[in-house]
Length: 472
Image 1: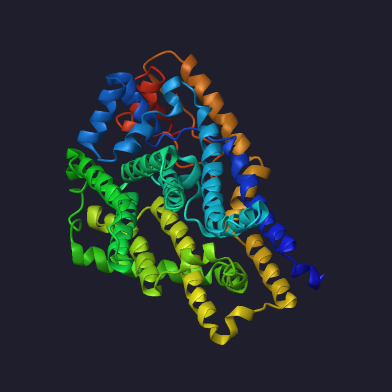
Image 2: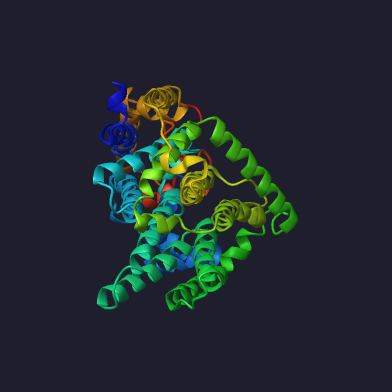
């Protein structure tokens, strides 16, 4: 048994088991997803009232500069009167995020088998879902996932495209890759303030790295900086941004925002390190890195000064928190914490690899011959399994799926749609939902007829208002 633990096949299969453990309930829950009364109906109600392009202009000039997020939200399946499309979108989103991480793993570790790459993705996604702040906001509430999860997946794809561009010979394929990289920069920046700051930091940081560290004038990097500058101009010249940022007196206070951001980042980092098996995966990662560094092509991806990697890591985490405090003076929403945690995990393992690469080249502490005994691996594997058993998130997603809460939620909403459509009159009162699976449910309809959720739902169904009954 202990000898089996030393075999790469067994280790990869264990990690793939973690991937399956994560993906099965998430994909199953996607089959029960529905649009939320929170925002999802309002985008399409605006389209029905004012037209497709005028509706997007209304949001751009009156609320936010998220031009690409606006485009996606106003193109949701409700525009075709297809609530079931939200099931497909969530299903594709989960697979899309998984495939983006797989593509990055294959690009960075080209000599690895598909099994090994999927194993790496399995470990990363396992940690991610184990402590994610809000599963509903990450994968099932469209108004949130198009402005955070989608651009996060696109940013990972952008990293893949960037790595590939520098390996391609001159020609049509390389030119197309340049255009694709530029489009991804434009799309990610237009999704949210959080992803804007991440992409600007990555693009500007890469250009500065080429200029200062590698001492080369990289025209491709200059092109991306220009695209990023143009995208930021479109974003920040939106009249809606001024309205959005004027809602809290603590907003636009730089010292306050910076201090609060650092405090929150420290608290979150400590929680993620102590309440997940992150340190267990860290030990396993350190043990496998010397074998990875035998490949020189992989080695060069981690051949950056450690201070540069750590500075970029801290910067990417910090700039995700700062806009919330600076813009509206409050702590980031759970959907933002989701994003921070994803980059926390990716950056954590990357910085570790940079550090171990230095030890490997210097053969510091015998790094080239680091070895983890099978008995230790067995203990670590048991700790990982136990962490899943005690994870609140895993109990929630499996409980919502296997105990029928998600199916009951799906059935109730289908009955509600039929009731609204078949009830005469401009105002329809609906019963509160009895099934409220935490992994899918965000909020119910609103009991106030004047509330915009009531009016948006009503407009979608051809009514004036859809109102939640306060006395069932």
